[in-house]
Image (cartoon, rainbow, N blue to C red; front, side, top):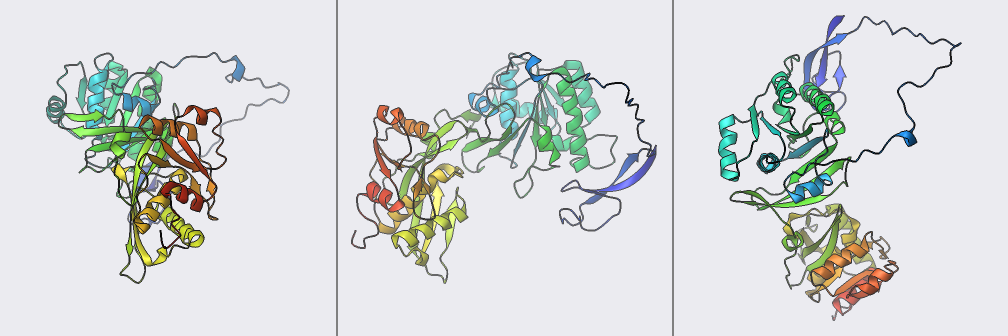
Length: 464
């Protein structure tokens, strides 16, 4: 076996045999780090195939012959976290939790580990803080005494030995970027270190059915740090979002092999740590009665959330109007403004437009288009939408309204919160669900017709 040097990009993981100042794969400067790679002597494995003997399957099995093995999930101690995980932690699975610094990742996992330790064996590996630092935070957050095991260590080999000795039901690694494999010459947090440490932990977790939770850092662009293979390696990727100067936090599932993706859990930061928000619609619903406010029902995973949209339209003092959107894609806002100007004759190209989603929620689905249009027109004409009205619909470039998915569940959530009037696209096909709901349904085929129904006047009329 021979040794050779290769240069690995710390941003994308690309390898090259020569050193360059710039990575040829991702274009990052000064990201190539030299590593020692072991290569074989080039000989291929001998082929013992005999054409006279018919080959037979040895390891594969027919899908129909496999027996059903029910998955026994482990409760995390928090319903919101269990919801995002798809019902709890699966033994032998790996979960990656990422988020901005100071957002509360370690706080959430320490609280969850304390709750789980009352029923299961749990090991908390702190690779960034000392044991005394974790103990002080644990005493501040929780008053419950549990058998939580704590290990403050950065050496991967020692962590693996402790996992093999304790064989815990759940292990938390905080964080994967701080672990170090002594057999590699690269620094902790590099692409090679993160990849090899995660692979070694995964092999151990699968072998002894330990549910493993990894804390991951994020880059300045908000992406998970480390190689992309880390996200492919784990079974679930959770992102912890929110403004650290605000009280609420959003836990979102980006990838989940055992549950729905884009599931949402809501927490609130309090004096003694993170608390669950059982009814998040109250957080995003302000109940304001003012011009420029419209209400929609967003769908996150399997949860319906009633959300207020706020718009402010004013005459611009610049050569080109300013368009700013918080919680919604700016390109989507530009498209909706162009449709309103084209099909309703509103001169919005001479006005500044600011749009915000109440509560800091990110709304990406097109079902919010009609609500955005109503909020913009309401602010432009200084009109207030009738109280208790929700608007749902996707806006086409021709000004038509298109049906949205999960409309029945959205309307049920609106009725539960006291809404009695809904503007929806024509031909949504609610069927018996629409008859059961105590809700006034107004079906519209175009955005103009929908806004006339919602506002009670024609907003395209200058005398409204």
